[in-house]
Image (cartoon, rainbow, N blue to C red; front, side):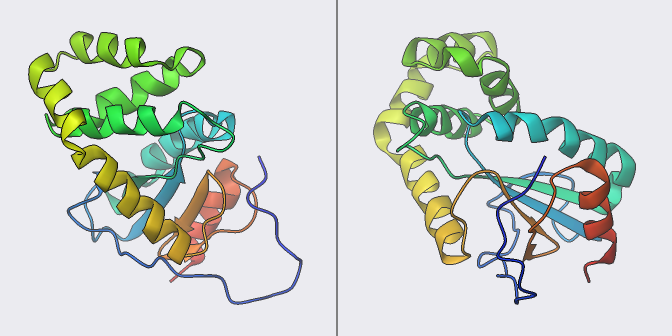
Length: 185
């Protein structure tokens, strides 16, 4: 799977503006030897496709990898992406981000407010708290922070990966990403 387009010039690639820290949704520990940050969109087929590759990288690198997911909903082309991201952030407020994250991708063709509530009940989340958290705007503010940090770092589409703090331009297949993780200081 190709990555973002490149102009073929050996130019300096953008760095991650906001370093991986405790605010991030991480699998692995911040400060691990390698870091992989994805700016993603729950309605993007490409983002769903790279989930398998990220899982392979996590298995290969084990405790040496910290994978962080940041929201980058592309509402212009994906009308359900923002609300899906809000559902994931709402689940995070009850410590169930990754469960909701996976379920949203598994049900990518069904994204709707009804689905988010059904998934929240199945996780299970405390539904009154979930609804109150969504209405509070806290999930939306978190997504706005992710969007802002992504744009500042040059993200224009999802998925976009940052490998060890630097934007990855090239293939999003397993071996090229693994090679990039291992060779980028």
